[in-house]
Length: 351
Length: 250
Ligand SMILES: Cc1ncc(C[n+]2csc(CCOP(=O)(O)OP(=O)(O)O)c2C)c(N)n1
Ligand code: SF4
Image (cartoon, rainbow over all chains, first blue to last red):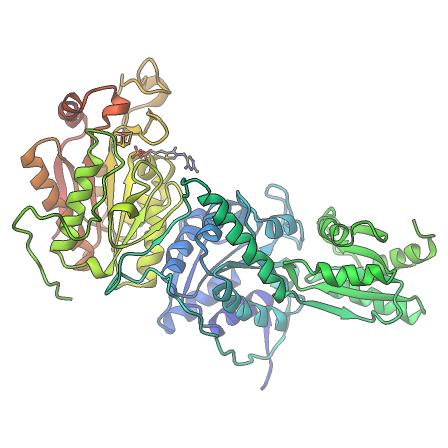
């Protein structure tokens, strides 16, 4: 198959189409407008629905309504818009609605900027809205992976009856790379919960209000059980772990710069490896723990003030040293910046 | 699309309603509105493809009473959720059931935009001039001088302005095909309310546009009145909120 040259945001839209997405609802925001613009052209041609909403609030609730009828549906936005959608996400998680949400994140807090940022890691992995709930979160590092993971997100959403988030950033969203439009075969899951009209059956309800004694606790236990079951979906990319004394970890587009730094360090003979979480929730705890048990130290590099590093520390429970190398949003670091820190880590005695 | 109309000629319990006691306070008009809604769904023969959106307010337990598919929406977002469902499956007959706080305060944007787009949905607003569920606070439709728990001295227009006339506003939208304000405090009005509801559903069934019915509705508990006095007070409300069909393109 001949590759095409597309932006990351376009690859996400193409992945959604390949997975049979039928409905898109969204509100314009930079740097992700290529997603709605492509879908506005393509979805109606395929008998699907494209609707620009009056706000992210409305978009997220339109998504809730569409998802409740059992069709494949999605929204996309960037950081401030995702904040506005948070209440609906909490409801969707509680109603167990499968849907795909894309965050092409930008710098914050507040209006922040439109440069690449990973400042929404907490928001994505810890739930964003109220109550004990989680997204399943996937984070691509290449345009091919953005396509594949978006398509996969629709399957996972239905498999677990669960909103799935693609967390990426302005860097991946805006850059162009070759993409092979691999054919996707959407999986089929039972939809015996969907609201399709109560023909030949009693009316169904999708609700999140539970006032009876113990009802809400059972509801939460059910959700937690599901989140534990989702650990099966954990994916990482590991590289040069053989003989590594220091493992550098990063996610998303930044991981590519980090990987270059690791290559530089290996060329100079430093015993360093690379581990990239692809699922951010569930977090690849076991993968980190195994390395920690083998005595490996960690350096966590992020385009924020240090967020994922907390999950790495939780995963290994203080059994080894974890350093943070945060780059708050402004300019992107060069591989050399990270390489210097790798050297410093390896030269310094273990804490 | 042809609808098999099953005229309800007697006073049987509507099949669309589940046989269980309402949780509403004595004298509350939610119950009458429920009954009418159930009758109309049955009469129009759309029970099997009905999709209701339960909003957040006293009527959030809508699904206890209606034997149709029902989804809960966050406070104020019923018209957005209904839009999503209707766009995803246009064959569904989609309705929302909302309070004045839900429809006209927190959710005003979603309500107006759904109407402006001419969504093929039916929106029902129960206007009882207060937030019933949370204990009788000020609402956009509270009358000047009306005491609520957050306007203990009465609504002062210099602080809170004047009641919002939603039906009048919606009638201006070309996307709205049917728009009426009704009341159920007198038998004749109940019959008129039923007819308005029927047309508000026909608006979407016949693909004409957005259908809207506003019920002037008694909330005896938060009005601090007994059920009879509360029903009488609805006439007083009607001086500010005329009971009227504002638009009928059916
Ligand atoms: C985001 C959010 N804000 C506030 C509330 C609390 N709340 C629940 S119902 C309600 C108002 C209900 O009033 P109305 O819509 O007029 O319906 P009624 O209860 O009178 O039928 C409020 C403010 C909520 N559930 N969610
Ligand atoms: S509080 Fe008012 S609106 Fe709510 S059930 Fe009671 S009477 Fe009805």
